[in-house]
Amino acid sequence: GQQLNQSPQSMFIQEGEDVSMNCTSSSIFNTWLWYKQDPGEGPVLLIALYKAGELTSNGRLTAQFGITRKDSFLNISASIPSDVGIYFCAGQLRRDDKIIFGKGTRLHILP
Amino acid sequence: DAMVIQNPRYQVTQFGKPVTLSCSQTLNHNVMYWYQQKSSQAPKLLFHYYDKDFNNEADTPDNFQSRRPNTSFCFLDIRSPGLGDAAMYLCATSRDPTGTYEQYFGPGTRLTVT
Image (cartoon, rainbow over all chains, first blue to last red; front, top):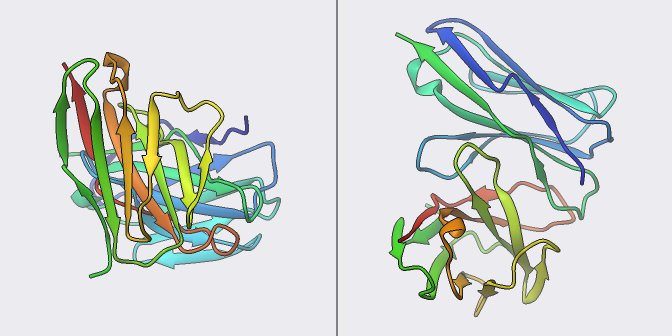
């Protein structure tokens, strides 16, 4: 089946640093979604993207729908301890398709 | 607040003993999904309901069944849980699968099989 390649798998950063992660595919996607999951909780939708080139912010988070429609990026500026968790990208090939999840990026913040 | 609610949050069952997990939503969304998520993995879609229409994923074992008696509630039945079925089970909803495709997840039920 279709796969999303999400990288990096994990990140160890200092508080206050900026974070970048991305998701790529060999297929063209219609929609990109970014979720954050805290331990023992369900994923929470952070940002949804619907158009190639779209750049959307949610507080310190910014995500972009790649021009080729085969990738998406998530940036977190000035990280804080509550940013710790797993970030999943998810994409939809066509409007009536199920969404496909990446394998997640686990973000750790060093004390 | 409108939300997706899952009960219980933690469920322990014995090998082979049927178990039912429940999900309710106050969002009035048309679509409800059940996902299985194992440790350090992405959620895996088991099936979904679009209104009363049931859509099973091809690789979902027959051991997993679902019921949606009304718009607000959806149940996941595991007929004979095996040790490999221990996982987090996530319910999600979306307004319409053909429009903007934002899924909203509940907090999950962590299932332990002893």
